[in-house]
Amino acid sequence: MQEREKIRRRVSKVSYIAVILLIILIFLLGMLFGDWIAGLNSKEFSANQQKLMMDLIGLELKDKLISQKDICNLTWQDVWQEKVELGTRINSLELRYGKDNSEILAQKEIYTLIEIRTLLLLEEINQKCNQNFTIIIFFYTNRKNDPLGRWQACEDQGYILTQLGKEMDNIYVLSFDVNINNPALNMLKNRYKINKVPALVIKDKVSDYKTLEELKETI
Image (cartoon, rainbow, N blue to C red; front, side, top):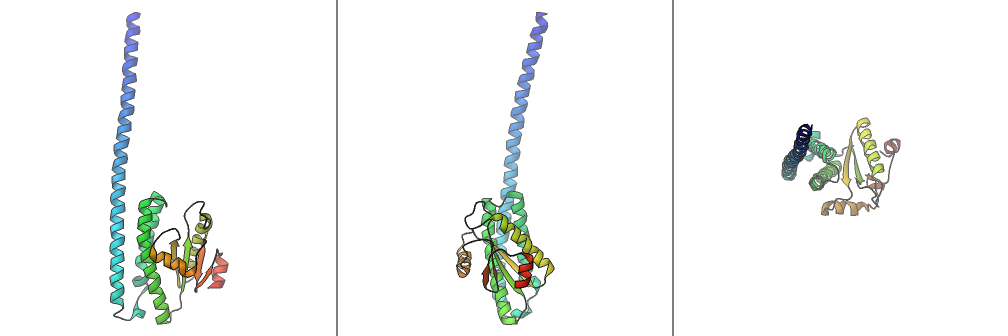
């Protein structure tokens, strides 16, 4: 009887040690997997940032070449398609890693410069080519408890602007995170005296939140 009890205790001790070792092994594998995922994320962020920088340089060079020909001959693809594709990529990263991710914010700053470049090109086309399209500049925040305004209202305004683009032609919406600290964006915010969000600039007039019906009437 005593021998059986000893065997049972020995087996129990071995099982206990085996469980502990298994837990340690799972923990170590989890750490290794986490490091591997982090490495993949870092490579993805780096590759995307390099792509954004190359796109920005490419667009700047394209602008210089455009000045040598008639700007009024530019197509939708020339002006807008690149910006849409880059914006879609940034939005995808935000959904995966969060809008407050430091890597995402760094890439958004580069994307902001691309948007400002697009804005300037659109304004030039409107002035020189007698085009009948509307430019909407949208300032928003993603921060919770932001003294500049409610992020929920900004998200709602973003959805409304997306719907507006689906229902009306010749609408160009450029969206800017008001908390990005960049000299070019700061100049744009100062131009329109943006001190709260959501804020819309339509035909050089600044307004706050607008419903879909109010936007259609303004345009």
